[in-house]
Structures are given as C-alpha cells and as structure tokens.
Image 1 (spheres, helix red, strand yellow):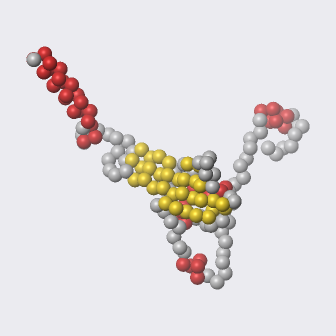
Image 2 (tube, one colour):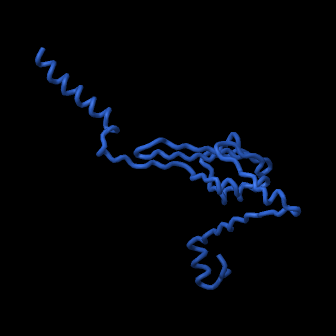
Length: 152
C-alpha cells in the first residue's frame, strides 16, 4: 500500500502543478497578436465601388480569401494578452465585378454628415503604388553591358 501511495501523491502533485501555471503571479505569458490589425479609421476609408486592389492597399491582404467564394474577403484580428481578456474582431467585405459592394462584421463605416450635406459630391480615389518587378540577373548584366533599356 505504501509503495503505491508515494508515487500516486507525486504524480498527483505534478499534474496539479501543470494545471495551475496560469494562476501563478510570477509566470510571464506573452501577448499573442494574430491577423490584420483592423481600426475604425481604416474602415472609414472604404467606399462603395473601390476595386480589390484599392481595398488591399487600404486594409492589407485579407486573412481569408476563399477560392470557392472569390468575391468575399475576410479580415480577422485576434489579440490574446498574457493577462486579460481575449479580443477578436472580424470584417467581411463583398465584391461584385471587382468593386466593393458590402461590409459586414464588427466594424461599420461611420456616416460623415459633412460630406452628405455638401451640394457637390466629392470623390476620393485611392491609387495604390505600382508594383515594381525587379529584373533578373541576366537582364541586369545585359543592361550593365549597355544593350538594354536603362529602365527596369
């Protein structure tokens, strides 16, 4: 009986210690941040009719771009602090013919009364910078020798 009691108490103590590590005040837990940081200011920049490229420039690449639903992009943000409550935000964008038609989720665009009251509608166009393709090694050597365009 005594031979079983000592290992049993030892195993129970180990298992109990593993389960209560979160409650110890001196244990450091890191903050875990995942996904796209979503702010109300970013959502307010979205306008109906924006292209996918303009939305990608404003919010970044979507967290979920489903191949079965190519006209829907999902942005998810999750913050799990070492101590405290978990924060999770989600925004789904819908497109039709490469134009933004709807926003769903935890954030909504705030109506701007100054723009709505204006007699002349103003449009804001966001133009993302052009992607620059870097030339390959053979092209750079060819240009260095003076046979190609100076422009990459």
